[in-house]
Each structure stands twice: as structure tokens, then as C-alpha cells.
Amino acid sequence: MKSKKIAIMGLGTVGGGAYDILAANREYIKSTQGVDITVAAILDRDKAPLEKRGIDSSLFCDSVDKLAADPDIELVIETMGGVEPAKTFITKLLKAGKSVVTANKELLAKHWSELEPIAKQNGCGLYFEASCVGGVPIVRALGESFQGDKVKSVYGIINGTTNYILSKMSSEKLDYGQALSEAQALGFAEADPTSDVEGYDAAYKLSILASLAFHTCIPYTDIYREGITKITSQDIYNAHALGYEIKLLAIGKRDGNDVEARVHPVFVPSDHALASVSGAYNAVYLNGDHVGDLMFYGAGAGAHPTGSAIISDVIKALEGKPTYCDFENSGKFGKDINFINDFESGYYICFTVDDKTGVLSKISTVLSDNGVSIKSAIQRTGKADTATLLFLTHKAREHAVMHALDTIRKFDTVRSIDSIIRVL
Image 1 (cartoon, rainbow, N blue to C red):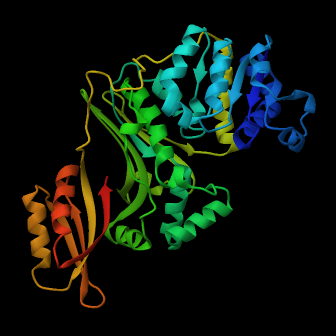
Image 2: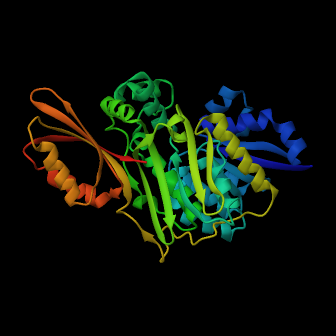
Image 3: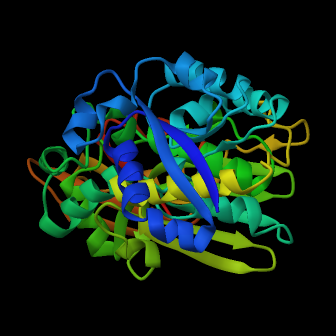
């Protein structure tokens, strides 16, 4: 029986969840994995988180330097969140030869290319299953299960907060503000929800997942990002009327050397499996050239789902030799990669226009002149001599659609372009 000592940095929700699992399943892990894991130190701002959980205060540590210098500690779990001081602390630990398990997607998306070489140089590992999609083992699957396949696409719902909000808007006819307030009251959304609702969190995760899936670095700064703050209850109503649900999707595709990566709201057909993923749950679709379509589904956040992913990494790290990226992780696109900004999609477009003859025809002509084919169009009488026009298009290029809308926006008869949402 191997005995291993580890430490935890940050005993918040996720760090506490990891500690709980180690305590509750210690004997189970010993019997099935042949390793006895002991938490020998916990670094936090003060002792309050330890006292809250009834943990012996002797485990409290107030300095990362003490962790780095302790020869008995082989591995450290980082669940502090944010870039600093987490980056500085992890760097010190890796330089001291200690493997690190982290759930920090923002740090990885921004500094993975800096941290992994330090791990390599010092013979230790950097593990991050918990950084993406909570307890769903998508990182391990991408890194270890598709060596014989070329992954052509990876896409799905990878942010639980936005999915909860959109699910509430859909099922209970709430507006965005009401759904957000409820998510905050229940702890699904932060007091400042910007990272989630503006799509940053999903972009960080997509950067990691797409890099692993396509064996090339996909910088998060190049990912097209659009959040859910402009989605209205009317959009939800229109989606239902047309046979769709609205979801915030992260989409990554590779065709040869052409790669695209984007995060934005999407009209998802109501009979698609992603349309039924509700609440804070996540789901990821993956397509390989031989394995075909696979779907990974489960809790995308939470103390114990994410803690489970952390403990899985802890056991893997303590078992053997670390593994690293199988591509040049430079933080930049590979020289052979052609990143596609002018991606192709279907579109839902909603206009408020003057209720006059010829307006629909004039808009349709501009769309057609820009190569945008209309799949369906609906006109509804509005208020005060206005009408609402709803369009669904066939697949079209992003730049062509935006160019057409720039022209239409200038028409005197067009009061506003109320919504532009892409269609899966």
C-alpha cells in the first residue's frame, strides 16, 4: 500500500468538495486504487474554512513557500480560481517538482503554454480534468481515447449558469433579469455574473477542449464570443413557435487545416438532444472521423461533481509518469492552421419595421443579393403601424449576413434589428 501526502490551496466550494470526497472515500480508494491519500496541508487566507468543516487547524498553511519546501508533499490541488496569485503559486510548486491538479480554466486558457514547460522541466505534471464541464470526463477522453480518430467537431453546452438561466426563461416564461436573479439567489450565478453570461467562461473552456481535440493551440482570444444578455422572452417565444430552444453553445470544428471556434447563443432544434439539457447540466457532442458521434452529459459544476474530477486527476498523477500535450503548445496558432472567422451558419433574424407594402420584399432582396437564402419568413402586425418580421435563413457566411444587415439597418422603413441568433 502506497501512502501519499498532498495539499489543497483554496478550501472553497470546489476545494471543500475535493476534501470531502477524499475523507468519505478514503478506504474505498485504498482498496480499489492501492493508495492511501492524506491531506497534509491546506493553504487559505485564514483558518475559518477549516474550522467550518471541523478540520484540525494544524493543517492550516499560510505560505506557498512552505508547501513547495515540504519534501513529503508530492502533489497540490489548486482551487483558488482567478489568475493571480494562482499562477505565481503554481509556478513555484512546479519548479519545486510537485505536480498540480487544477480546476482553473481561466488560468489554463491564458497561461497553459507557460506552465506546462515548467512542469516538463521539473519532471512533474499539470492536470486539469476539473477545468472543463465539471464532473464529466471530457478532458481525459480527448487526451487518451481518440488516438486513432481525427476529431472533426466538439460542441455543446459547457456553462451551467447560462444554461440554467435560459432553461428558466424557456420553462417558466421569465425574462432575462428575473432568471438571472433566481440563479444568483440559488448560487448558480455569481454576484458579478459577467464571466458566465458574456461567454468568457465558455470561451476559456472551449480553448482548452478544442486544443486537445484538434491537436493544435486554439487561443481563447481568437474565439468569437457572444453572451446571453440580449436574449429576450420574445426570442424564447419565437424559438418555441419555430420549433427550437435557445442554448449558449461552444462550437469547435476542424476540416483539414481549417479550424473555427465560437461561443454564442444558438437556435437548437427541439428534437436535438442538446435542446433537452436543462438546468445547470452540461453536454458535449464530439464527432470523430471513425468513431462517429458521441455525447458526454452530466453535472457541469458543483462541489462534488467537480471535486470528483479533481480526485480522479489526483489518483492519476500519483500513479505514474506525467503526460503532456502532443502538440506545440505555444499559445499561438500552428503555422499550418487557417482559422476561420467567416464561418457558416443558419440565422434567425427579427426586425421591427413600418407596416407598409414592399418592406418584406426590399429586405429579402438585400439578403439575396448578399448570398443569403431565406428558409422561412413570418410577418406579424405590431403596434403603432409597425410589423415584426422573422426570418430563418439557410446556411450562409457570417460576413455576408452582417454586410446585408448593415445595409438593411439604414432603411427608413426599418425601425430596428431586434435579434440575430445563429441556428444549429
